[in-house]
Length: 404
Image (cartoon, rainbow, N blue to C red; front, side, top):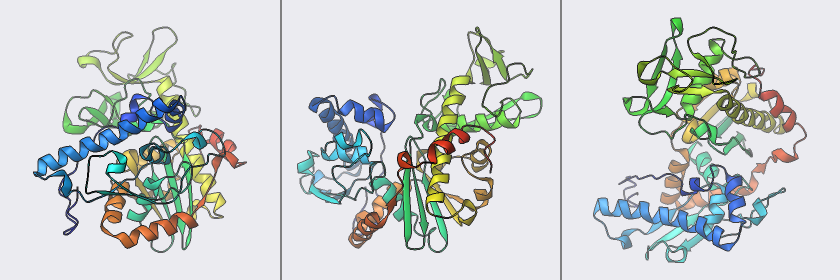
């Protein structure tokens, strides 16, 4: 919540995405909405209800009345944009993935059933099917890094948006990176909350040093922790180039059983030796496969975007990493598992909450909203499904020896 006169941030509040109850990726959510009007309405109402709850919590904390909330800017991916506004997502269910609406929207809070009688809600434009107002807001917030030269903005999460800016030319695409990057769909996965391991380092003799959010005992792996663990396993020689755990290697981190299963133990259960029944915090073979799919999707999208723009990764002067996952990830880990070419590592800056900062900028500067609309209309969207080379790049990027 922001004071429109002083531009001072008065309060912040966050909740998990209510759509996680349906699925962690946008495709699953679209399929759920297609079940019928009641399903789509449930997704719409859960988003609006979460918004009302966030606003209510902040105005109570500040001792304000609801009619003091005069303006709101809402950004999110295209699916969330459509569901929040009550638009049909039918066109987003299959290729060529056509949004029902692309332009900016200004609507009253009452029209969206937000119980904000004096509020006008501004929703920036959609770029294309899976590049929504959130990517546009991230780019707006990153403009300082993109002034001069060639800049790549990567908003990394369940759905990763990539934006390449070269002078007056802008290209955008979206990679279905999946939920593993946010700690979901892996056996010991958890959100980035206290107790989540976010950094793993294998020390001499096989001893593992982990760092957790909140500096409390480890409970599981968030996305950055899972990637860090895979990167360390590669450095320790515990994985093959195909991503298989070297089950015949004698190492204190490799745990066998039950049956043919094998895993990499990161935190022993209550200080005891890991066993087939109690493995503490670990990475399974399936976890590693999920992370391979995620990292391959992002790398293949990056390479396809750069190739479509007629440039090379060596020509990129700056990389802005943001998003729930991207802003906190160790760049060395991203390079070592093959998400980023090594030559780009020195050019990376990490920006926290770029989409949120861009939304605040659009809230405070009405002229900037016209700039955002112009930017969306002249951006070229790179359709990965229509790319003849994307599938080949995706297959190659699953390996851990991607050329960097």
